[in-house]
Image 1: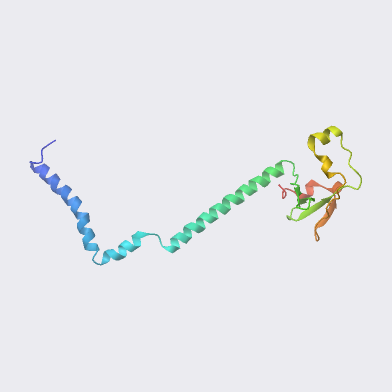
Image 2: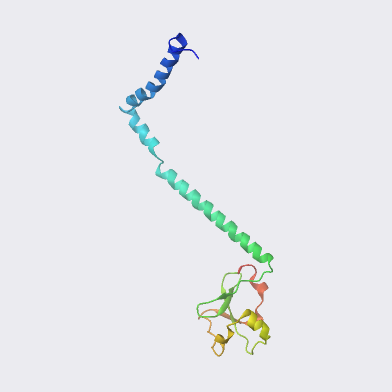
Length: 159
């Protein structure tokens, strides 16, 4: 490396000093008029750009949500097309048909015969339901007997 006393060393030092001083000098010149507008534009994004970014993000989230929903429905349809059964707040059982309307299931008129081993396995606290009446369907809803329940009619809407 050559010492700063040579011609090349002085030129390098002068170039370095110019590179440091040039931005400071330009900053002073721009600050007197034209630089004000430039600084305001550079300071941040416009409202329009922010709105576009927010809308694009919302559209992306909606797209991902719908894609996830479609994948769940396709997975449910592949699992045999059995709709999801729900228990309402009043204790009734219902599922949703292809138009997403609730279809209430009623209890059979005669008791269902279930082996005692299955009762203990699937409903160990079944005694709490003994003697309680079945809650009626809310007004305005279609009622269907349980023995007429056909999962194929609901399609994959209840998944």
